[in-house]
Image (cartoon, rainbow, N blue to C red):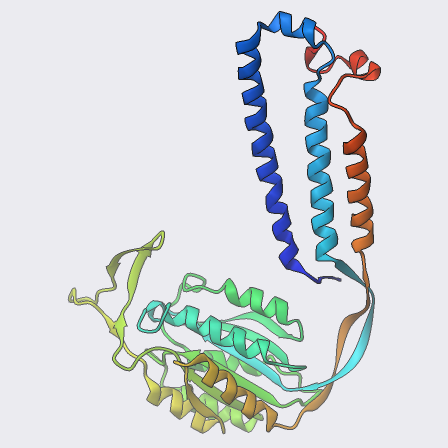
Length: 345
């Protein structure tokens, strides 16, 4: 397992394509200037030891030196051993609605992207809790099992979209049923299910299934994403709105936030409903709820003894720079024997 301490230094790598572009421009300018000065045969007689190969070699070595220096500044670290540690926390499963109605832009940038932002910010404020992710529309689909790997959770979250499930609808009941399988019965940790949805097109069984989940010790908190006034569902191609979703009569479909459904589900499972308009308010509410819960101890495996590896890349950078300094742009005896690019002709 590895860690990257200062990822911002990867921007140094942007210098490399700039250097390559400048090198190409310089070579074109030199060739044009040489043609203006004299013909090709005369130039070879005037400067027989000029080497294009060594110029390219110097460029490659300089780019390798910059790349090595950038990685050294990032300071990669490698975990040398995997150990089991005791942690205290709550098991939290996020069920994210990915139905087409979540594309409505009545809340910026749209309901689905807002849901992703909310989950990301909640995860960023967790300490030692475990998280899992479920995607659902007409069916529920597991995205990530319970884990302490927050980076993986956020990666899976960002890849979620409305095209990942072909069946449409909002089967909250199936998401709740699937969430039941996420929790470890042996460890008996506190169980939280956070549902993010607009509550539209829901199943009548959702409240009943929520009550059953409550009996198994699962508390359900619902976050309403959208606007009560609603908005149309855009049909886009390459980010451009082509049209809006129509019903069978040709009328534009207006999808609205159904808070009553979400409140009923939360009430049945000893939870609470939270409006998702303000990200900070949602994060604060969830943080307060989790802080009031008893933290249960569980085992988790994690890499330990992370050691700096920047010194190796720094050495490479210094070596490449020394080679670049002492490598002249003139042919040497060994290069003449190789006769690269037919330079002696």
